Length: 93
Image 1: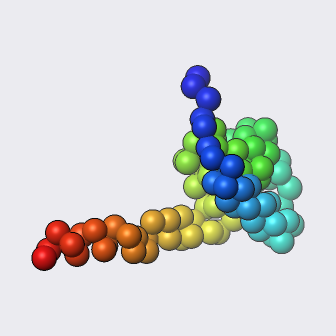
Image 2: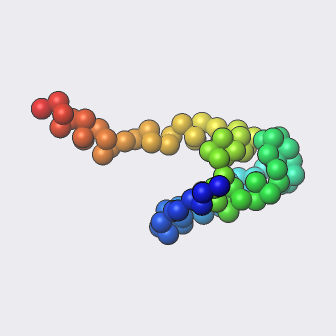
């Protein structure tokens, strides 16, 4: 498998996301075993998600968010595409 290359500042963002997922799990008083079983992933995969590992599939992240009741947050990804809309507007001129 090819190693994923992520720039340091983006790696930090993934780390923050992982920490937020971990805190959401703890606020719900769920163990890593419970979340992993409900998300149908290995506990080691959940540990990687909570560290913000870029090698974990997006579907695994989604399943964990679903277990935590945060699946709607997934829809916020790229929802506010300001730069893309500006580019689109330039094409309209």
